[in-house]
Length: 317
Image (cartoon, rainbow, N blue to C red; front, side, top):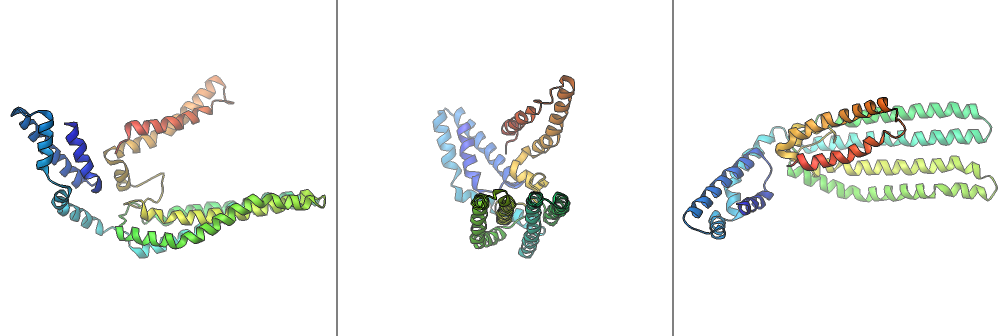
């Protein structure tokens, strides 16, 4: 009997995981099992019964023809809410602008440290401290604002159907952007690696400390190129790797959850909602009762491992 289930599961791998297809799969499995039991009652051996059931079932092409109507209906039901290419282009344009601001904010935090060290070396500590807080405040503002914009821009597309034609268009755009991504990644990594060079250069004139602010400028520039290029490059995957758009990877919509986890979507949602709050409560309770604040944080390490184990055991598609 298990052989029949595995055979049927293999045949259905190429079909979408929709309720209609799953219903058809269950109906076919019931028919095959009934036929198998009837053959056993006729005196057939287990292997003979399985072989006859599979041979009489038909090929995958016949199965595809049988499910064609259901697949078409399923696709048509999504047409009203599918994402259009113009919406994808608008989203990617806004995301590129927000990524620019996010990258500048992250780099600005590094530049703030470099400015503080640079002015401290020159003997103007108060000016350096003032400049540090001004640059840091502006940079954090950039990070918060653009981070919120990244989520906001994707909200209108969240949990909407991504047609295969849009996935192909996104793949083409990603391939066109790949060269720019590679250049930004290579230059970004090189700037981070070479950030030690200014210190070595100034060391030749016995002023090595003057190379520290320049080092932070190198690192900030490299981090900006890496962040900007990487985020933009992975933005296309939202339209390539998923059937439904996911604005926030931590909070996928109902359709995206079902597509990824099947009938276990509700279990996954429940686990994500209650697991970490419970871990946090256990952490504070244990720490307060035992006073072991110095090492009680280790619970989060084990909790992360246990979360993956629970997903593997209970969350099955």
